[in-house]
Amino acid sequence: MKKLCLLIFFFINSGVICRGELFTALSDLEPLLTTHKKVVEDLEDYINREEERLNTLKRYVQVYKREHVKAMEDIPNYIGNPINAFTLIKRMTTDLAYIKLNIDLGVKHARNISIMQYEDATYPSAEDLRGAARALTRLQETYLLKIEDLAEGILNGVVYGSAMNANDCFELGIALYYETEYRNSLVWMLIALKKYNEEISSYPLTEIDILVYITFANYMLGNVKEAEEWTKKIVAIDPTYDISKPNATIAEQERKKRRKGDTGEDSLEAEVKQTPKDLRDQNEIYKTLCRGEMDLSPQVAKELTCRYLTENHPFLRLAPIKMEYKYRNPDIVLFHEVLSDSEIQHLKELAQPRLQRAMVRDAVSDNHRLDYRISKTAALADKESPVIERVTRRIADFTGLDMDTAENLQVVNYGIGGHYLPHYDFATSRNTQFADEVGNRIATVLFYMSDVAQGGATVFMKLGLSLFPVRGAAAVWLNLHASGEGDLATRHAACPVLRGSKWVSNKWIHLVGQEFIKPCGLEYQPEGIKESLTRLVNKLI
Image 1 (cartoon, rainbow, N blue to C red):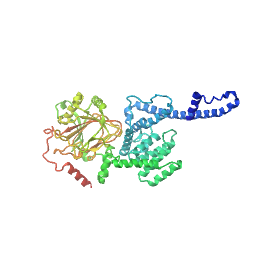
Image 2: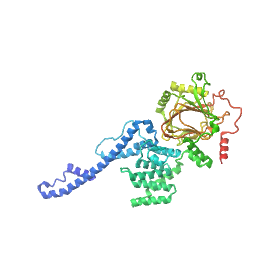
Image 3: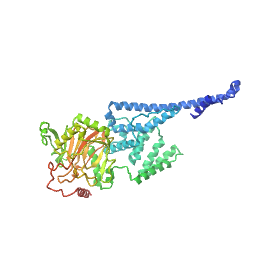
Image 4: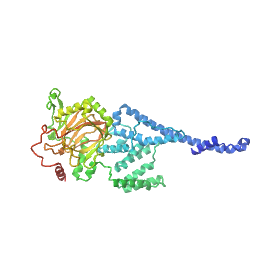
């Protein structure tokens, strides 16, 4: 192409080639045929390259159009599918960068043209792509999904999205590799290799690119012999390939992560590795409950009842609330139809513009982000809207508790594979203590503002209880014993959202103000929180 550009430049601008008055002798024209042949060859080469470039762009246009049409048919369900969510983020990050590169090659001659730079446009980041990759792994491990099925757009045996192509699987494998998820990265790379050899398409990667990651994923997993075999395949394709370059890059990144103490693991996994096998089993209990595969014992189930709540406030005699016991001692109650569709929509509209990444509080660094809590939240005060005031009054009605020291209503939206690993709502020795003016959190009210197609349950590990979202309902439980100490049985978690969008809102009610409503018990609980945890660990050992 450079030859062609130079040739045209000389013909048009310099006149150097025609200064010899070639027209005056036919013999002098014969050498022009050689130049003529070169022009034809360069033009054909240029056209072939342009056609290849344009065909690549056309293929991407068809993919984008096909996925966009499908998304617009049912936007919530489309983006609620984690596979679609990942591919959408990838389309707008690595794929878009490749598209821009191809466009730039064709418009270098067009000055002052800005390609796909839109004002007020939203673009995902590389961090979003990595987060989506981690989410897919979290879902796969929690819900025992086959990676081969995920690659084909299948969730639990049902096709919900488009199949991923070789490049999609490759980018996912890369993201997982640099999150030290080597085992899952290896599987995705093997699928990428299979698809690469089956598909007839142009990608910004080569077979060797995939083989390199397969090699080093095996190496990081300790499969040295297998890594050597894959290295031989690389050398067989390209004997000149320097295998040490990617190795040095990857090794350096590993050293940096070790220096930072960043293992890429969430708090639960890190905790599991430092505790006995019985505590590790709690992680499996958590996942089993998320899948809804654990039933309450007959002794517990027979005590569960439903009734209409008519006490606590005179208005409830006129408009009783449906009340369902999900567990007894500690009591966990589901109040049905306590949020209307219009109230839910109003709360969402107020919260949407100010949703921010959920933070976790502790005694060391106060508020900070952690991977074991993936969601965005917004706090809504009563004074902001009559609807919020009405919801707060309703909470007082069905809980019978005073709202003067309660926290603002917190609206939460969970993202791709969004979850919150096991935790207590009350302050423990590991959390920042609440101010004496309000006391500890005595109760939790959790409103479900959406149904969730799959996943997203609230689970209580010690109780073996799973609460799946019911739109408009509210789950309520007490976090403290009558003595004021934390109830260890209330340790709970928000399971990853497998498909759909999960919206909830919660109200934390504090101890101060409840002295006459929920007076302290005469029987003192002999063990504090720390002692109870120690006893539990010793028992499991």
